[in-house]
Length: 574
Image (cartoon, rainbow, N blue to C red):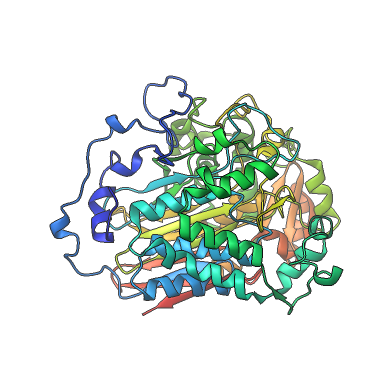
């Protein structure tokens, strides 16, 4: 059933046994995914069979009843043009899902370096009533179980956008995709950030033969116009033929012909997983985050450890604060590298990881006793030591809230900058499956249909009434959890204004090393060194660009904050 309004969505989301907890496939095949190992109860991130889900059909006679919860609507995204696309959709009467899909395709056009049609992503949906729902439309290993040299998995972005729109959207598919088609066809001005990505790192190598990025053989610079006619044609095909074409139609055939490791059968059998997100208590709130194989459980563990260590009483940016959160991160990072995996294939001890009492009792070692995870990539640390961004410090994040309080927190990516570097029909293919090698634990081994552990982590905070009061996420690779945790602690435990929490200086520990955003005071750096940390300054651009929206139901208003580190923006619609 396609829900026709946000009012209809509320009862459909009510209860953890809502219809949205069904494993939703492309609708293209009857093939079932590989069964999960037997567990006593369903894990967050694990699919539920449709016959096990009680019906939650709304009463359509009442779907338009009731007043809006809020007097405003809002969007936060990684680029002003993506914000404008979402604003346009909301102004036309679309809901938060319509706007999030529009913004996602727009970001795919504006920042092709970081996300798009050839990648994947995940999203959390929640409203003032009911329970949150998690969508996982990330890339999977093909049906043969083979990982190509490019690391490319079967893309899930288009399926995720298509199913979200089908199940919750109010506007037509064409209306939602049209802003991004126009951006690709007519072009836009290249930002400083995109110009840097085009001209540094793998950009020159990957883009050398692509006319759109290197007209007349010269790389585009900031202020130039980027026009992508081939991508516009692909968008036109998606609009005319529907999202399923990417998995069974002309776009699928073109992809199979050009891409190593992608075959027709694997495309046709791709499935989006819809499940329970992971939830944990932090302060007076419930933090709701991405389910395994994404690191939501580790984020909650990190927050609970830091809270138990008394971080709520510490001055943000102080040596004590930085040391406490970095030590908590050390435990959470070990969890990522040892315990997390795809819950449709392995059992993940989510309840243990997110148990506040157990986390309060954990021994949290200092830097002298810590060691870097065995599988962390020396390449990334070496790049950052030289003042360069690591290859995987990307992804894009979007938060949208509509007048009915429906909130979407969504992260999309093609993994490394420019993904695998292979362009097909105007978009870049992912290299998501490389994460099986980077996070090489027994719980994270490749096999057909499996999703890898990685760093993307859409997150929300719910109040005591179960209502979303904060949507938050960020790009940044291994920095992601530290960024989100820092914002939640300052905003949620210390009552610090959202903008101040977003703009405060960032950091991340790894073993005995502590990587600090440029700008930390010498006094703090000295105190951290005395504690045992080997400090190193990194450029601000390595610390993501948080997208956040705060909801105040009593005032019926929404607050946003822009992260100055990249091109992020937000807009409030009255």
